[in-house]
Image 1 (cartoon, helix red, strand yellow):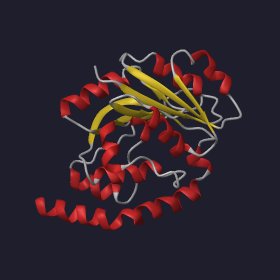
Image 2: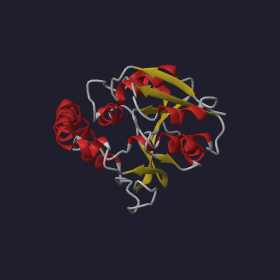
Image 3: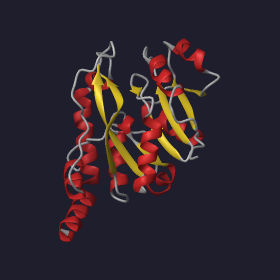
Image 4: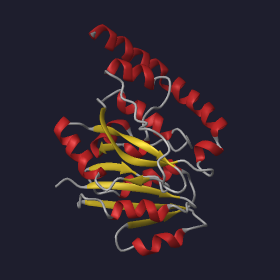
Length: 238
């Protein structure tokens, strides 16, 4: 059985126990749960009941990318997954997505998902975006990120070719990494909702929306030349 490492960056999040509940009850058994406490000053006590079921790492505050990278460094699994401490996995997420990865011979996949509110009520239709072909995927991703980071599963060998998350990008480290991956590997989409993505007042994407817009432009410009080259190559294949 392949081993799946699930990294949970944690910083002052009151929902951490719900995230961990969804992980310790996964239907797939060969997982390791790595919680990286990124210098939290609140809600750490909510992790205590799970300490016998997880790897727990404490570090100084450095942002989500640094927490993810510390988790990856300590991960012993064959595959990497990420769960934000305010989100929830479906209990079958690991099992279903891993089977999909093996069937498709995939190194990177992402899934469909729903948004939920503070009371766990689903508030949207499914939100996953699945471009019809690689050309369209490249076009869309060259303008912005459509892949929710907590829906991904990645063969850990991929990081040997692309590197890990850029810690200088506080909010778009995931987008930057997906662009590096898409330049070297195919990306597969599983059209099944396997994540509940929480929308709430304290979430970073709401609190730092203006900074995020600027950071997206920076990442787009960073990869513009290589993405344009990929698009031209893909057009020639059509």
